[in-house]
Length: 86
Image (tube, helix red, strand yellow):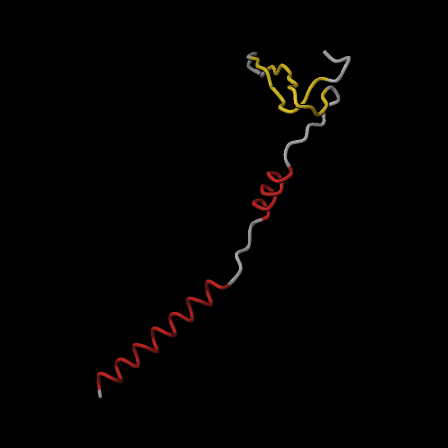
């Protein structure tokens, strides 16, 4: 008789623990505003608002001069120079 009571108590304890765990995991996860902003930025793609470039399947580049005097070329994929721009 004692073993049956102990088994029943163990069963109830496991059922209560499982129910509690289920309730804790059922709550919706909330994403921080920064995470949502990053997801939206990744989904929107890159748009370039430069008056010397237009969208194309070609390249548009510009020379970048850094504060330390070093320089490099920044290439904008999918853009080309508008006519009349160097």
